[in-house]
Image (cartoon, rainbow, N blue to C red; front, side, top):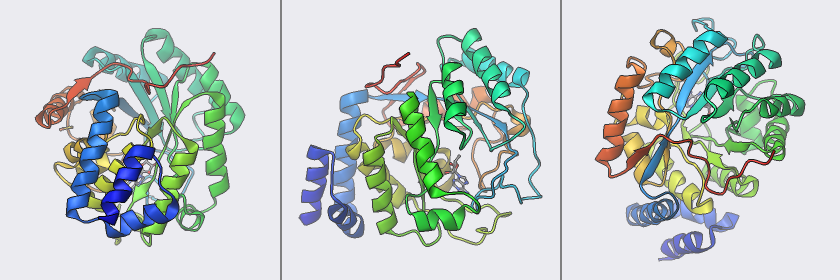
Length: 351
Ligand code: 5AD
Ligand code: FES
């Protein structure tokens, strides 16, 4: 009964304090989980109807100077087969995506010093020039305010930078030579510049507790990002966390629903990682309040090399095949695919 009351408050006020949030996470049972899910689904339907937005993900480099403990493309992984796509290859991937109907391209890569700001800006300008109706999302890690500003001025619309975990202690144990404060500063800078910003975290990291999730949720509420990406941690065989357990479906679904109620209009992907830990994971994510899916457009030859975690789905499928499969999956649970830019409904670009 108490738990149900907390869910009602979250639904009505889009807010819970830390104690209530922790109580909810500690005590939610099957019945309340379903109650929460239906509320989250109501809210997403109120703002976004049955639409699911698709983003074409282009993984353009798996070189990375960082050494995140969980990640398969970390600098120290000598088994990773490294690759880079050049500007031409990126553009031809966009062209293929455009023909399939995509109107958002997400350029994602490791923190690869080869791609100077000038090269990134050249790529952004070319994409915006050839495909003016498309949104460009960057996901290339921590940069200076000045670099972020230059990418924005070149036409980048959105930026994904998961905070990974809002627990400073956990963050620092997973990210050698990186600082939690800088991560948060980057997110604030991106907001200040005027990007649609995506933060987010992993679920089921070693030693992660419900108290840590409370920190994540409070942080998201305060930052108010336009997008939130969350997904289960999945071990990768060539990382120090290879023998750890993956995050679980149930917790991820509960957190998706809570985020939908905290930030009602947020763009919330049902992630590939969720589809990897369970064959119906992405469909269940949509039913829990998610409204975005990010299929992979990267050329088939490089797909397997962008291996952040083991078992990643959709690495063997051509973009067109994957798109048909995904459409069927989305429709199978009563939603409809929207290939438009799919901006956050509160969004208006200034300048
Ligand atoms: N399991 C799940 N997600 C991962 N990411 C990186 N490595 C893993 C892993 N082993 C996520 C991070 C990153 C995003 C691009 O992928 O959250 O921000
Ligand atoms: Fe990619 Fe099914 S969604 S192959």
